Image (cartoon, rainbow, N blue to C red; front, side, top):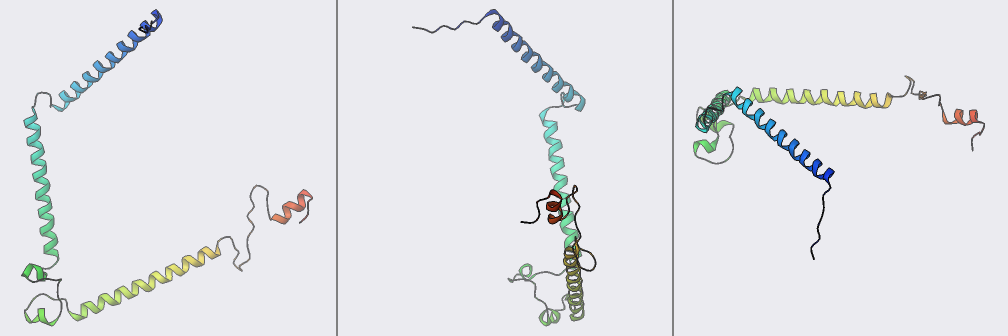
Length: 169
């Protein structure tokens, strides 16, 4: 036995209207797409053109990366690591490199850097202390007593209770 379902005239009308609206929406969307492509000029230009352009962009990016790398290497001052020379391990500093006549930062320079770092650390400690003190000072008077926060007529707990006539329990 088959179960048959009936759609009323009103339902049929509603369904056809819905389908009609969907169709209109789709047509409008397609029209917009075509217009956009025409504006960009990609409608006539095939996939080949687009691919070519993309290729150019990528090549340009790669060249940029290369240039950047060169600049950074130049800035480093031609200090090469043992790895690049064929050994292993990081850059070595000191008399062995000086004997080879390679570029080494002098002892004095290293000392200066250390001094600079130390000074920076002291400054940071000082600032930290000031911040802590500031936190402690918040909500207090200069002499250290607490200030009352007057929020919507509520003052101290005790004052509120006495006003309400409860007294402190």
